[in-house]
Image 1 (cartoon, rainbow, N blue to C red):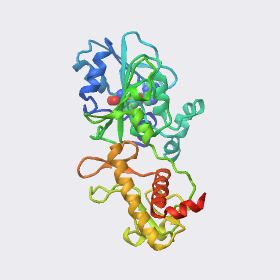
Image 2 (cartoon, helix red, strand yellow):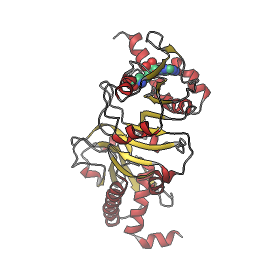
Image 3 (cartoon, rainbow, N blue to C red):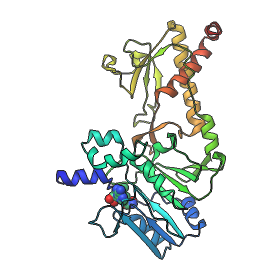
Image 4 (cartoon, helix red, strand yellow):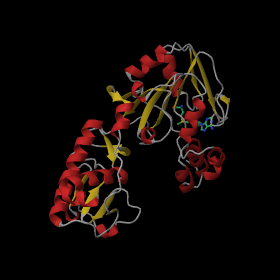
Length: 336
Ligand SMILES: C[S@@+](CC[C@H](N)C(=O)[O-])C[C@H]1O[C@@H](n2cnc3c(N)ncnc32)[C@H](O)[C@@H]1O
């Protein structure tokens, strides 16, 4: 591929949905329940999603794309998407973060979109534009779940663990939306085919630190090490441990390290050991109760097919605070 072709593919997010794993039974049921007669993809690309739509019975399809070399009417759907009566949007819009556009040297191609919105990824602008229509099914990055974007028009969110694309390992989810505003406890959350609960439950389970205990992350001489990402080996998940157990040169830890860190806490060795033990128990329990929905997705899956996860440092801090209080309740009393 020439440089121009690569830059175009990246700027326009031209990664086509060659796999049908996203079309879970409940997603199909949602599409049917809308009564829509036209399948509409405003980011149509190779037309793969519209082909799926035809296969499930749509007699009419409509595609738009900004790329004039494709066989669709040209439209900049990040600026506006026409409202089409009796239609349902079925799409996989471009994904591109502000940061990654700059890093890849293609920011100039997409600057105009970031200038008109406060989002940090183009897929978020795409959602806003798609919501001008009544119904939709969108394949988007799974990071959406932990984003602050409004979710009240959604009927469901489905995490898809199978890898959908041949040319990227981006963790994704499928959102189904309709024209009604809902409470979060009316929005279903699925992982693959399994209904896990409602969004209200997950929002309540979120952990926030109180920042009432001294803790410094990325401190190379700290007493608690954290492997903040699952390895591909299911036996070696995210874990708090003693620095000597992590098998990594901790002097390499930088201010920006996000995957492995060392944390400095003011406590003696015995307490530190207890904090490590409690933090791991709290984390394990949290992962079980939330089915990992609230942990950031990480590229690539574990060997058993489950998605790898990353523990962000805000949530890690919340576990350490709780563990600290369990490990030395007296110290806590002194704080107040
Ligand atoms: C991730 S691909 C998905 C294509 C198709 N929906 C699929 O799933 O196979 C995104 C598509 O959006 C198109 N696109 C990118 N920016 C666009 C814009 N501003 N307006 C319309 N289409 C755009 C790209 O050309 C590309 O074909």
